[in-house]
Length: 170
Length: 388
Image 1 (tube, rainbow over the protein chains, first blue to last red):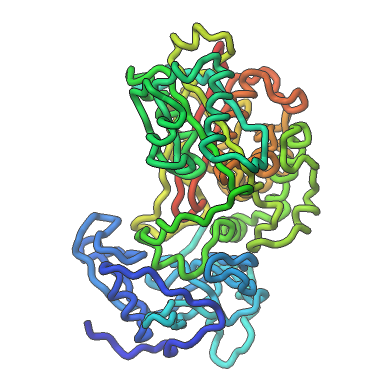
Image 2 (cartoon, one colour):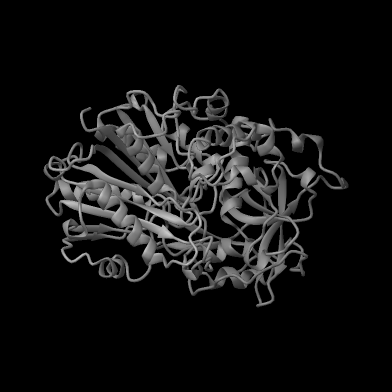
C-alpha cells in the first residue's frame, strides 16, 4: 500500500498510560501502521461503508472484500467522560478522558482525548489525531483539540451546546 | 406460536443478606434454589429444567446441576447476557414449557463480589474489539458515563434529572429492611457525592452486593396443584444491541426492540403496565430504558422522572419498589433476577404496603447487560396476575 507521508506528529511518549493493544493476524496491519503515524480504516469494496473496528467481514453486507485506507486524522468529539477511577493499567492514574471521536470518514471510535483541560472539553469540538507509543512497537491513536491556527484557547462556540457537528439533526 | 399464558412463576426468592462471608458461591446458589422451591411448594426432585448464567461456577449449567443434585433434568440453558440473563431465562423457560420440553424450571443467580472479590475474567482480551478499546481504559462506569454525556448533549438531560431516579429509589428502599442503602437521599446529596466518571456520581451508581436469587417457572397444570399464588408469563422479548455497520449511537438501548416484542406477545401497550422493574445499574440506565420502552417520548425521560413519575404507589410509572439496584441489592453486579422477584411480589400483593401498587394486574421487568449504548443485551418480560 502506498500512502502519502503522514501529516500527524510522530509517535511520542505520553503522560497517560499507553497499554499495548491485543493484536491478532486480522488486525496486525492496522497496528503496524500506527508505528509510522498512520491511522488505517477498512472500507467495504462492495457496499462502500467504512468499517470500524477493522475486521475481514463487512458487518453491513457480509462481503469479504475489504480494503485498508488511511484516515485524514480529524474528527469531532462525539462523547467524553473524565474518569476519576481508572482500573487495570490506569489504576491510580490522575483523572483522564475516555471518549468517542467521530472521524470525518464516519466511524465513531473509542479513544482518549489529551492536551485539553476539563473545562475546554465539549461535545462536537474538533479534534485531531496524535499517536502515543505503547512500548511494544505500536502506538495508540489518540486525539487532541484542534484549535484554529494561532489560538491557544478554544473558540467560545466550542462550548456552545447548540453547535452540533455538521450533518447531525435531532 | 406464543408463550402467552403458557407458564407461571410459582416461586421467587431473594437472598436476604448483602454481605456473606464464610460461604462458598455454590452454597449461596443452593440457598436461593431451596428458597425459591420452598416458596413454590416444590422440591429439588421436582425440577426438570435448570437455567443459569456466567455467575454459576463451573462448566455451564452442569457443575451446579451436579452440586444441587438435579437428577431429572430434561432441559438446560446457560444463556449469558450479563444482568439481563435471568429475564431472558424466564422467557426461555416459558418457551421450553410451552413446547413440552420441561414442566418445572429452576433459575439461580448467586455470587460474592464483596466478600470474595475476584479479578475480572480476561476472556474479553480475545473479543474482536478488544485491541481497539481496552488500551483506552474503559470501565463499566465510564462506558455508561459516555452514554449519559451524549444523552445530555442531544436532549438537554441534566444531572439533577438523573439524580431524581436515585431519589425515587431511595424513597422506596426506606421500607425495605434488607436494603443496603435504606436512607432517603435528596437531589443535592446525589450531586454532591464524589464524581466517579463525569457526569456520573457515586450515588448515580448501583450498590455492589453479595447474594443472589432464584425463580421457579412451571407449567399451568403444575401451578394448579400448588398452594401459592402464581403469576402468569404474558410476553417476553430480547435483543442484543450491536452497532455493526453503523456508527455507534449511545442514546438508545436494545429495549427499543425487546420492549415491543414483549408488549406484542402479551397483547398490551406500555400504558397497561401497572408496575415496572427497570434495570438500574446506573441512573442513566433507567432514563434511557423508560424512553426506549415507550413510557415517555425519546428525550423526555429527564422531565418524566423529575416530575415524580417513578414514585410508588401513585406515580405514573411506579418502579423498583424494593429500592432496586441503586439502593437495595445488585447481587454479583447482575440486577435482572431481583427485577423479576420484585415484579412477582407486586403481582402477589406482597410488596411493602407503603409501595404496593393498588390492584396491580400487569408488571414489567426489564434487564440490560453489557455496555449501555455500545454493545449490550436487552430483555423484557411482561407478567400478569394469574387471575388477570
